Image (cartoon, rainbow, N blue to C red; front, side, top):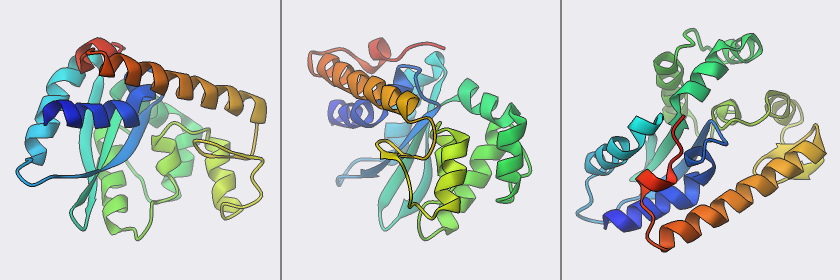
Length: 186
């Protein structure tokens, strides 16, 4: 069962495991007999030495939203004045990693849909996150991992890099590589 859950993590989080992205968010439906705290403990035991952490960010109807992130990348976002100013508009007051995640978790728990600032936590370009909000998700120039409103050529390149990363990581995992071997240390 652990290998199957690890495969799920690799499939959804390869760009973060590779150090290309601040974080990934995915939904996990648990099978009977699977204990979430055991899964997270296993993942964190493997990932934390490489600077990657996993935590539950929300639960809805028995489905768990798992956020896998690079601690240093998230701290860098919290240190960015433009990101801070943006997040203050949603009520964020602390900008260390724990404060950011605790408030984000609160927002995820109390939101009917994903709070708009989720893009910041996933490492999307801030201006694209702002424009998504301003245009209500419409008038984008490209859609891929996110809706792109600016710098289409660069975003196309990023999407291609993420796609290749997922392909390579999934192939290597299927060939027997472990999470430890796949995860790049920061």
